Amino acid sequence: MQMHHAKRVEVIIEAVMEKQVTRALEEAGVTGFTILPVLGGSGRSGRWTREGTVGRATGMIAVICLITPSRLDILLEALFPVLDEHIGVVSVSDTHILRAERF
Amino acid sequence: MEQILSLAGQNLLSPVILFFVLGVAASLARSDLTFPEAIAKGMSLYLLFAIGFKGGASVAQHGADISLGLAVLAGVVLSFVLPFVAFVLLRALARGVSTIDAAAVAGHYGSISIVTFVAATSLLTAGGIVHEGYMVAVAAAMEAPAIVSALWLATRGGAGGRMDGDLWREILLNGSIVLLLGAFAIGWITGERGMNEIAPFIVAPFKGVLCLFLLDMGIVAGRELRAAGRIVTPGVVAFGLTMPLVGAGFGLAAALLLGLSAGGVAVMMTLSASASYIAVPAAMRVALPKANPALYLTLALGITFPFNLTLGIPLYMAVAQTLTGG
Image (tube, rainbow over all chains, first blue to last red):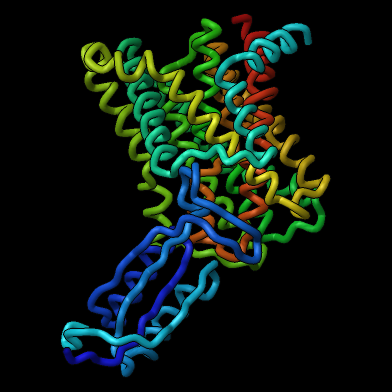
């Protein structure tokens, strides 16, 4: 089975910024992404959890996308203005994918 | 004073308040008692739906006149004005608070806590004190204008803040407002007939669901207090306890000018005394991301909300009854 080198970009960001982040991904030419809810975690402000919360102000989401290495810089440049002032983490890792033509 | 203490005593011994206290105590004691997020949101949707519908049905039953429009207008004005009062008071009491943090907090105190509103109307109903059904519309109208005032304060102080399409959508189309106003409109349109059709769902179970929801809110409030740490300075606490009384004073003045009933005066005072911790925090994360969410969430949820629930509402009820003779 032929595999192709790709970049996995994971953005853990405040839930209220979901639309802005996904819009930036789409404008950068990302063909698809996955949004996962984050149950809780810990950061500079201490531990937090989604348990029992009602509003979106305290929640985080993880947005994951796969992209060809040649387009990584374009994607990160599109994401930076959206994320700069908000609570969140961006990580990039190497991965391999099937059906590279879909990315 | 006796009436206030008597009302406070009755209030504190109501199941609604006791479940909130249980939640706070459980959280402070680090119990693992929690509600799944989906259930908390489900209860919130139910309460908004029920309170909105009942308000609309009440307006249908009693009729709407110019007093509805005037009360909504008064609510909008209060929501625009109270952030300026809160901003000045916070900066005076807690001198270390930055402009942007003070502006963000101010936005919360100009807006309203729908849960405090629900608790107040529930206690009024339990006490046989009637209030105008359209106060639901006043509550919905008071959610958003404060955010505009807060952004103006932040911008004027050089702290930035952007009003773009995303923020307007967050402010005007957030789920709480859409459901509250939508249910209010449907209750108004369908009136007594609609009320009879769904009363078994929104009348009898209401208080039980409210108890569970306030248990959850107590857990979350306790969690905020535990995590507050160095943010909770004496000045910040003083603000959290003083601003509700100041806001209630403004609400009282507006309500008396409008000639509201005793219950209506109490509700207007409660709305003006409360601070948002659902809709406005989300808007502030978008508009003023550099503002410290720990400060405004701790104030709104950890200090002011418990104060209003336990001592504030009985005080506002007593003052309202005393001044209106109701």
